Each structure stands twice: as structure tokens, then as C-alpha cells.
Image (tube, rainbow, N blue to C red; front, side, top):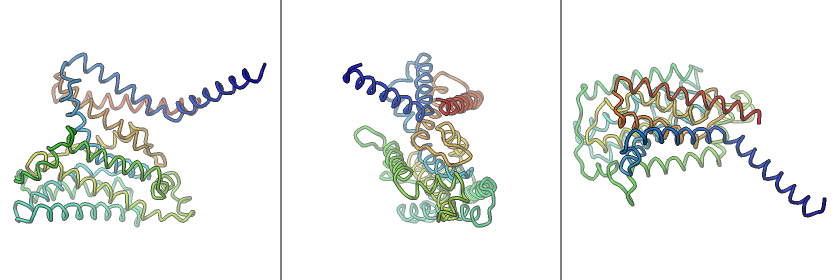
Length: 334
């Protein structure tokens, strides 16, 4: 074998090894992309409106509202925690904004700041209680779920509160270069959290705490602070989502975001983040958000009635999760 042939063989082997390494490390994302393509193809065959530009923007707009909360949920689950309060937190944020701005006449900008600070602090408090007293996060956030749900009803008396501001409506209904603002906001936040998880000490600490909290503590990481901070982040993102929903609808109502917490958790798990902690994928969560939003939109377009939609959506999500589990196991074998 001459030198040129040997060099060519080495190059081929190197490329093959790189390809297998890429596949092994990205099987979850690849399987989810394939699932997205297949699902989109099925819906497009059953509805001519599915692949229109207007409908694609509708899917992305819906995905944006789910995505904003899901970026925070990814951090929570990465640390081995869970937050079931985000749905009512979004609804409470919306109602609180209407209550302050409409019922009490506060300037809208001031009301928005109060909403963001309040819900972020409540999220931090829930995280602090979990971290300081070692209360399971499911129990802590379930209590917050009830508090938010009760408060939104007390403030609104179960009635919608109009928020009249044409400038404010542009936040969620306007666009830049044809791209709806919610998509841009969700995209910017996605890039921020992608950077945080990949390039910062804080991001590495999230994985360390989720993987082995005792070892993380022994290495000098403030485990309590990390745990409390991720719940503050979900509070912040829930507030932002609630504010954008008020902007979109022109009214504050406690009926929004019903079941959002379950859709968010499902998107994170579908995206490959381990519920046990230590493994979190913001990019995977993005694909999970798109998958859930695509299903919700497609079911409406093909005429599946509302009673059956939850059943079909649940089955498809379960299948997606199971497929990802299988691919993860296969990736360890390759």
C-alpha cells in the first residue's frame, strides 16, 4: 500500500468515525426532526392550508408563547427539579397586569415592571423554600399553582379585564420584517439561554447540580442558590408570557395558559432533557416545542373535535417520548 492510499484510508476512517460520533451525540435531535417532518407531511396531505405561509407563522407564533416558558422549564428540569406552577403563573401575571393598569389606573409601564418583579420573586421564594427546607419541588410548585390560581380569581372575579393601549397591542401583534414579534422575542430568549447553558459557569453548575448535588456542593457550587434561581427564571418567563398574552388579546383573563405547564414539561422531555436531571438540551426543547405546536395546529386543521384533540395529542407525545428513549439507548450502543 503506497502512502497516498494509506492517507486516503486514514481520511475515510476519520470521516466515518466523525459521522458515527455525530450520530451518537445527536440521535435525539435527529429522531425528533424526522418526527416533525413525518407529522408535517401527514397533516399537509390532509389539509391544503397546513403548509401555507400564514399557517406556518401561526404555528411559530403559538410555539413562541410555549417556548418562552419552556426555556426556563429546561433549566429547572436540568437541575433535577420540576415546576408545575407556570400555567397559573402566566394567567396570574396577565390578571395582575389588568388589575393594576385598568382597575387602579397605574401607568402600563409601571404595571408591567410590578408584574415582572412580583412573579419573579414568588418563583424565587418557591425555589428558596425547596432548597432551604428540602421540600420536593413538585409539592412546592403545586402549592404555588393553587396560590396563583386563587389569586387570579380574586383579582379578576373570574371576569376579563380590558387593557386598552394601541401601542401595547403592537408588542404581540406587530412584526419586524414580516416576522411576528413574539417569534422574535422567543428567538432572542432562546439564544440567550443557549449561550447560558453552553458557555457560562452558571450553565455548567446547572448540569452539576442535576447530575450529583452532593458532588456539586463539595466542589464549591452553591446548590441552594442554583436551585432557587431556576424557579426565579421560570417566574420571570411566566410573567413575560402573561404580559405578551394580554398584549395579543387586548384583555387580561385568567382562562389563558390552561395546561401550559404540562405542554412545557412534555416539550422539555421530548427534547431529550432527563427528568432525573444532569442532562438538558435547549435545542432539543426548541424541537419539542415545535412538535407540540405543530400537532395542536394540525389537529384543528384536519377537523379533529376538541374532545378528541387532547387524547390524540397525548398519544402522539407519548409515542415521541418513547421513540426518544429508544434512540437514547441505541446511542449508548453505537
